[in-house]
Length: 258
Length: 247
Image (cartoon, rainbow over all chains, first blue to last red; front, side, top):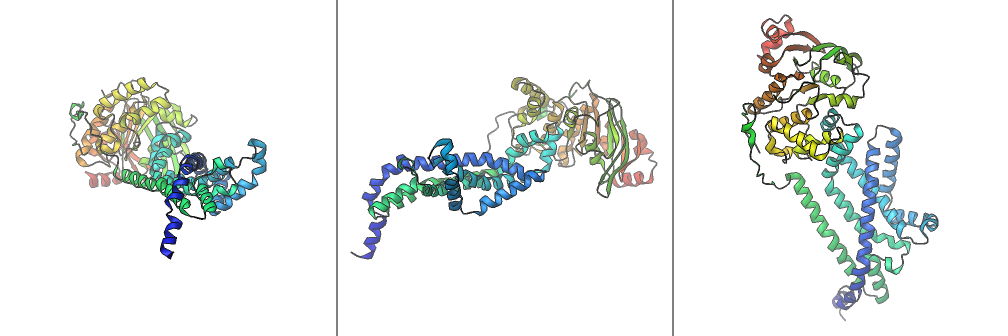
């Protein structure tokens, strides 16, 4: 057999792929999405708290936030997942039993928190000080002004980076296989790997790879789309309302410059 | 006619001092604005005019001196509650770009005044109508001209029924052809009996609308009086020099 066809069969064995596909879609895909999406949600909530702590005037909030970010951004994801998945296993055992799945989500969330916290912080800090002043001048407290005016604008500005983080989470979710999940908890990568291990053929792993791309490539286009929209503003919503400037109670002399 | 402002109060600023580090921005400012009167504050840039406005609603706390509404000091009040009584309009409008025009106006009504959604919208639409922008309620601020944005900002402040209004160079960021519409709204408001402090470079407005014109330079009010006195019979040489340059 020539090397080229060997290579072809190693990666493109359609039968091996067909065999792995049902489990890939019914077990692997849902688990990957559960891991990534729940970590993204938890990571966003915690990341927002981290971001606000990071810009706090109190050093007792600022410093821990800084340290947290440095540690969880600086560690390899695999190390964090192992440390938390294994290190907290005895604790998890007492709370929900021997299942490592929640610890996988927790580890992914804690990693995501560090990155999303930095994303949100940069967004919030990019909002002009005049916005805060405008809100405070209306009588809003600092906390209300942040919640209603500053944070919504800041997060909007960094949505592309946030979606990038979701992409990273989808990929990093493959690392929870370290924790030894049961068959029904396996995500895309683990299922591909299991098939590859039993058949000695990498096609199932390649299929897993294609599944990741099917998730991540559209998301990168979502990023680009949001980015464009943020830059150019939303598509003009045709204003059907009459321009009633001229009915104003004083001599309206200004032109309409939309 | 812009709004029924029967609730406006008198404003007194007494001996207000403020320093940012070694930079003494306000050095004993006095300003008295009777109920329903309009005071225009003029002067070169860097003279402390905008800072003075911010000490009145305590966006910046004065180091020394007092601010009184209706003869009562407000320095001991809750600053957030005070700012609901003192409306402010900024040079750069400071509208919230992520909200519709309508929501810009209803936000404080709903969150601070605890009005229901319908009631807040009724108040807001009426206020927008009065500044000639009823048809723009569902637009985003970025879809409006600068003059329209500033009128929304005025409507947003007026919706809370303030007792005093502060204007910080409200027309300085506008293209010349848009200035008149905003000044018209401000003149209407003044005529309706709102107590106003207007920091401005529009000498025509000061001359026609103000009851008092105060000239600030280097952190103090050097000269104050009715517009005729300031513009026709200026006493202080620095004021005369300033007027020579701007008129």
